[in-house]
Length: 71
Image 1: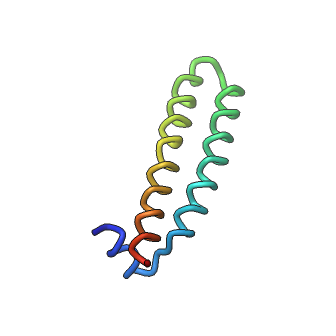
Image 2: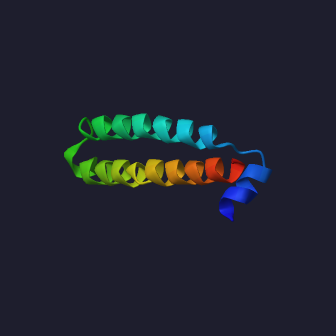
Image 3: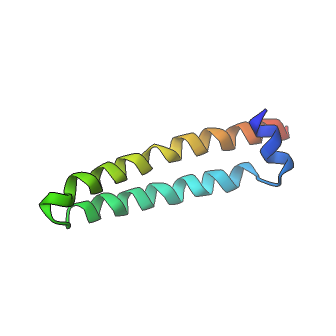
């Protein structure tokens, strides 16, 4: 159902696949940046990186759902 609605809205599977790959790079950037901040803020920075790391698999699966609807 969500795949059909997104497909009708003009979102294509490759859009979400590309966004997923960009978010992986962004997460790595956040993780490396977390190693450079002050010790008192490091825990927060690492949690932010882990939170962002949850998005790419979700977006990739939604992109696959859109691709399946297209067929």
